[in-house]
Length: 250
Image 1 (cartoon, rainbow, N blue to C red):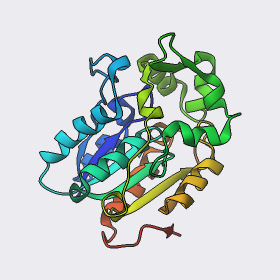
Image 2 (cartoon, rainbow, N blue to C red):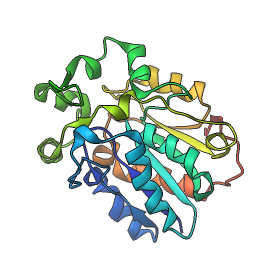
Image 3 (cartoon, rainbow, N blue to C red):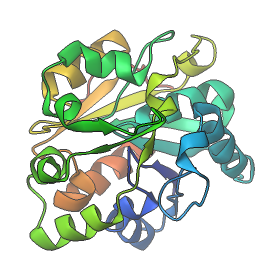
Image 4 (cartoon, one colour):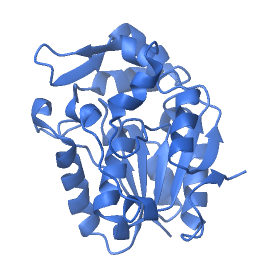
């Protein structure tokens, strides 16, 4: 059995994995889905949160785990798991990017989304007056994040969103081939994603080669396709840890 550390994306919290966690646990896996600083139920003022804060919180969790983990990042969570892998590579069996941002070293999450300047993601983002957090226009949220999610799950999710610390998106990553590059990587494409569109997903997975899996879904597979997502996560957990990072899994 495997240990999974599930890292959420912008404005959400560990709650976004609420359909995935019980499925993994029912299969005998150990699962941790924490709130990043300033989000979910974490009471850190979001305007003060840095990428280093995210890494520090998750590193403390990793340091308490006895076995290597499958580290999964959704959306903006991809930035955090990459930098965490640089800091704690020996604690991680594999990195899994679920329609996630995957900048190369020296680049930030914002650098990636800027590659598609006309996307709904960028056009609907609303930065706070102090320039330290952002949210998304409420009328755009259903089609942006929850296009194929049930009305009940969509409503519950939208009620729990919080302002996102801007520094997570704007801080360039520092990654080395020796550390980050030594961890096997997988990218789970979400073909119908309106937030991080498939062309950008594929560009990032090509620049930082990953084994690629595909889901026919939008931006929130943990709500729309939890069973399929769990099947992929279990497959990744069972894969050989010495498999090369790049290439399609098909």
